[in-house]
Amino acid sequence: MKDVRNASRIGRLQFLSDEQKRDIYLAALEIAGSIGMKVYHEEARGLLADAGAQVEGELVKMPRHLIEQARQSVPAVTLVYGREGELAMELGGYNSYFGTGSDLMHTYDLETRERRASVLEDVARAARLCDALPHMDFIMSSAHPTDVNPHHSYLLSFREMMRNSTKPLVMTAENADDLRVMVEVAQELRGGEEQLRQKPYFVVYNEPISPLEHPVESVEKLFLCADTGVPSIYSPAPLAGATAPITVAGHTAQGVAESLFGLVMHQLRKPGAPFLFGIGAAVLDMVTAQSSYNAPEYYQTYMCMVDMARWLDIPNWGYGGTSDSQLLDAQAGMEIAQLTFMAMMQGSNLNHDVGYLDFGLTGSLEEIVVVDEFVGMNRRLFRGVEVDRETVTVDTVREVGPGGHYMTTEHTYRHLRSAQWRPTILNRYGYEKWQTEGSKDLREKAGDKARKLLADHQPPALPEHVGRVLDEKVNGFTERVA
Image (cartoon, rainbow, N blue to C red; front, side):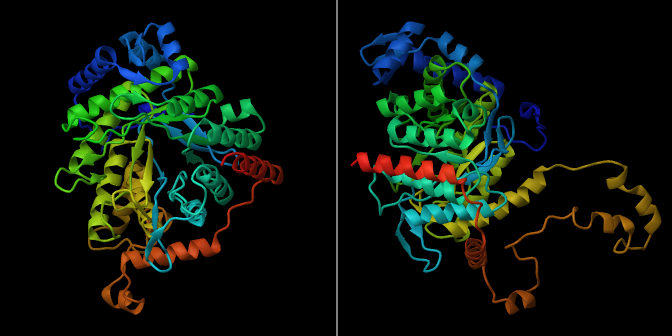
């Protein structure tokens, strides 16, 4: 396995100096240690008290040495595998992966283009589309189905995602009960508990409540992940100006403290268990009262979080491919490109929310196709430049000489297919050809591609015994949970 922590820094962003990272870390230690946080899980409080934390009722104050100890035990690289057992993602260093988000209450219908309530079939369609797109690396539910019992929705979505893609998943769960069913199915898929620990199939998204609270459900999911070796994200969503300080530095410091507090509980439960650090850096617009995914301050706090994750040497949870616009329009194009490009330049690891419009309230399959194209183009850019005798090709320049051309040289033939990236929906033709092909804009072309992929692409079926266990366990859960 390559050491992704030592990947090239050429062309990379950095928002914080080493001194600023240290200052934010010290502020986070002070928040955790002298202010403390509410922990509502009794067993977790006992675990923290036994390790040396100061516990006063539900308030826990975290000494610095526990955070330092957790930093030493948490893995710097987390491996995640696809449904068929192939290595799909090496989370850490500057490696960047992209996938959809979860739990969107509304969806733009691909056929009617009308905004409507999301249904379970939208989960299946988004998963199958992402399975067909080469630069979508993992699957989240995208939609939150409103046509099923809400207590069943996470497991029913898990079943649709598992059936419609071979790519790894990032899962949300209501609590440890439905998450446990997902883990049991994944263990069946892999062939046992240890096999799943060696080859995790999904990552679990989990979060505390800002400011400074850790609910029972969140801690139970955190502990279940630690016990079973399933990688756990623990990413607070502090809203700047509402549930976090309005300044970027204060927003970052509180988020760092909340995520690291979860890390300590996770590592005390199972030292060495895989964990992803993160902050959901949304900003409350003080004029509109909207929670913005694309304000400049959101970008700044997000980039500061990635800086902190690399400084801490912990894989990070990130973002890409979102827009606050209600439509896939010019504003959406600006915001999608800005956020996604910054995530790639910064080397943010596991980037979700591709397909989000309307402040994270509405999903668009067309947008997923656009972001896939954008990621592919920029992966070509960040692949770097190969410089050797063959690519510098002085001999070919000598062969052509002054006034010649390279159209028919052997060197051009050798590199014709590899030297240039080719788009699938971006326009590379002149006006007349564009006109004869229907004068379509990017949204229309993305919609055409999405419909074609959904019509033509079918992922391999689950192994029969895994499909049977999946149905038995999901159906059993829905029958006993009202």
